[in-house]
Each structure stands twice: as C-alpha cells, then as structure tokens.
Amino acid sequence: MIDTSGCSLYIGLLKASALATEYGTPLYVYDEDTIIARAKEILTSTEHFPMKILYSIKANPNPYILSLLYSMGFGFEASSPGEILLAAGIGASPSEILFTGSSVSIEDLKVAVELGVEINIDSIYAAKKLCRLNYAGSVGVRINPMFGAGYHEYTITGGSRAKFGVLAEELPNIVSKLKECGIGVKRLHAHLGSGITSPSLYIELLRFLTTLARKIRGVEEIDLGGGFAVPYKPSDKRFPWKVFSEKLREVLEELIADNYTLIIEPGRYLVAESGILLAEITDIKIRSGFLIVGTNTGINHLLRPALYGSYHEVLLVDKLCEKAVVTADIVGNLCESSDIIARNRKIPTPREGDIIAIMNTGAYGISMASNYNLRFLPAEVVVKSSGESILTRRRQSLEQLLESYKWTSKPLTRDT
Image (cartoon, rainbow, N blue to C red; front, side, top):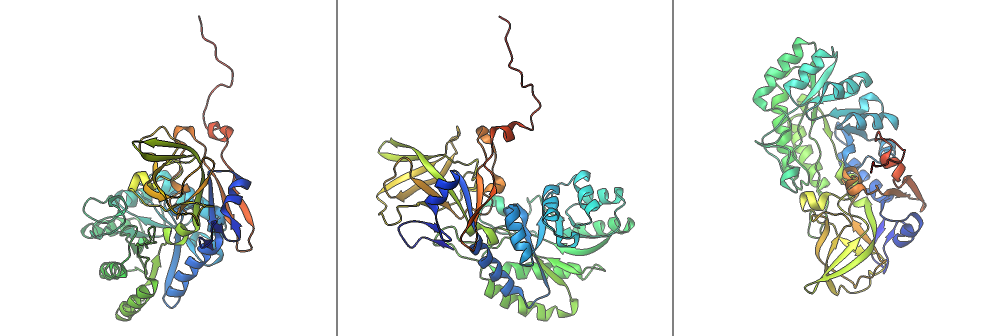
C-alpha cells in the first residue's frame, strides 16, 4: 500500500525516491496492493447479485493492470478498436469484452464484428453500419437518460447537450431498424458521468432503463456504466459501495421477475489511487514574492489539471516530516501557459533536485498523455505485492517518437 505516515513516501515496501533513482523521472508508479484492495471492495459488495463487472480500459490501459484485474474475474469495457485488441491480447474471450464507441466508423465496427465481441451502439447510424456489415447477432443500445452527474461539466455524460446515446423516444425506431436486419437488442446501457458519490442516481437509472427494457423483447442485461467517485482531496467523498449494495438489494427484490443481469463498468475507482507520478524539481523562481516551482513533467503527462481544473495532492517525497513553510505554484516544462500542475500549494522549502509525487494519478494520467512539445512519454512501473518493482513500459525514445513519420534521413542542404 502507499504509506505517507513517515518522513518519506513509500509505495509498497519501496521508497519513492529510490524508485526515481532506479528508473529516472518522470515516472508513473502503480501500487498493485491498492488496485487489489479496490477490486475486492467492488467484488465483495456485488457478489450476491447477478452482475458482470467490466473494467473500463480508458482509465488506464497498462497491460499488467488489465491482466491483474482479469485474473480477479473482471471483464473489459472498450471504447476503441485499440482497446478491444488489447483486451483480446491479454487473453479475454470475446464474450468478456464490450465495445461501446462514440461516433463510430464502419472500420471501428468491423474490428468488433470480426473479433466477435459484445457491442453497444449509440446512434441510428451505428445500427445502419452494422446492417451494411451483415452483422448477425444482438447488441446493446446506449441511452441518454437526460440526467447525469460528475466532477466537471466535461465529465457529465447525460443531458440535453451530451453527445452520447439515443433518447428514449428514439429507441423504438432503432429497435425497428435493427430488427429489419435480423439484429436483436439484448442490452440497454447508460452512463451518467464520472465522480458520482450518490448510489441513488444509479438506482434511478436502473429503474429508468428497466422501464424501457420491459417494452423490448429479448433484453437480458441492464448496463449502468461507471463513474464511481474516488477522493482526490481530503474532503472528497468516496463512493459508498455498502450503501449501493443495500439499495440495489431493495430494488432488485422489486424487479426480480425481470431476471436481468446487471453490468457496471468501474475504471477510475480501481486504479486512480494506485498511481503516483514522480518528477524532479528543475527550476525555482520568485515572482512578486510568490514561488514558482518547475518540474520535468507537465500536462503532457497529466492533462487533468488543465482540462478539468482537477486537484492532485503534491508531496516532496523525502520531506513529509518537514513543515509546509512556502506557498507555490507547481508547474511543468512545456511552452504552454496552462502547464500548471497545482496552484497555491503549501509545501516544505523546495530545492532543485527534490523529487515530488503527484498523487492519485492512476486514472486518466498516462491514458491521456501526449507528445506535446515533442516531450517523451514516461516509463511505467508496478510495485508488486511481493515488494519487487517491475518495468511495464519503457521510457519513450526519440527513435520511437519519430518512427511513424515518413521523412528522409539524409541531411538536407540549401542552395546559396
């Protein structure tokens, strides 16, 4: 587990600064025990219900993490052909992979159809594409329930301006179109957003989808999506799985005759707290008496602060016992004004070369990373329950960065 109780940060049995020395920085580190603990919490809370639990790969596609969760009984929710292929590559069977795309092309659907994975569609156009592919099977339909919730307006996926899903009144037309092509509807799906703390919203969604499902012959599954909240600040609430389990038990007793299998799709909840982005302080400036602390990472490695205004705790890994005596902005190394990791943070006196830890970065950290400014992607390490660390992704090199470009390797000369 991640230990902040002493003067130095430990990830499992290993000192964070030692990992930074061994593997270099910037470095994503994931604690296996934290992932296992979160997974067991979900499994224990849902074990008495007819339920499939699918890990949402977009949260973190690290193959080691996928293999770990698969070994614990999780299937996978994929949002792209690449995620489908990754899930299949670690050994998941087609029935354990559910593809829910947005604005899907016919090429996207070809991958899903050819591999035989489960499919959710989210528009009449996706239905027509499946007809053109002569798809023979059944699908799920993603519904926009016209309500949602989340950390930020960009993480709310239900409502009048949301791009996802079909409206309830559009569903009969889609069902009819699918039926013309011999395609059945076996599942109704909706996703409310990300960062939801209230179990009651999922119960409301369950009732909503069940009401629709009763009107369609052949529906077997109700997919409630994901979005279960994890705490980023000390004051944040964690999703209450025990309360969710109790409320779910009550409503399922009412709906027992429908005999639906439920699906949930946790992503962030399983991996967010396991991840730490380690970086080195490379620059310190004073502006009008205010401190700006520069690092060798940035929003190219962790986009969430710039995109969502997200909060991540920042620690100086070997100064946990020192008092916070300065207030600083912690910034990145990009030529970009929005490259700010944390604002107005009270920290111990920083020094060039100090290692910082950006906490709770296991979800939507590396998965949203980019090569902006032609900066390399960081390495990824997992600290195993046994205490050993393993490199699961090498640090990107210039050769890897440029290999997709088509260019001449000959030096160019200018006419003078």
